View: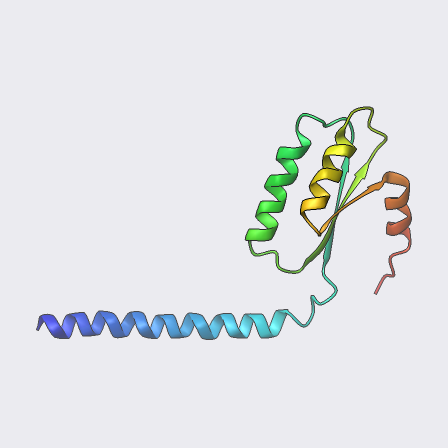
Length: 117
């Protein structure tokens, strides 16, 4: 009787695992076609020297090790900071390829040139 109960539990878990694998395969094959261009995130900062590194590292950790596999770039636009905010983000951009630093003027030009589909 004990063997029957353990076999029932193992087979139930095995079937559940199989359904989860099939569900993930269907999800990946369905939704990856539409997101091939990626997602761009723009973060505007001004005078955030004390907080910017912690904020950016937490965002990068969530994106790189989370479920945001379609993210192409994180653009940090500096709004004419009078401190070392831009330098801190530039140091981080050397470690992470998806992180780009630009001025607000250049960021506005990028946004104005985006084609609407």
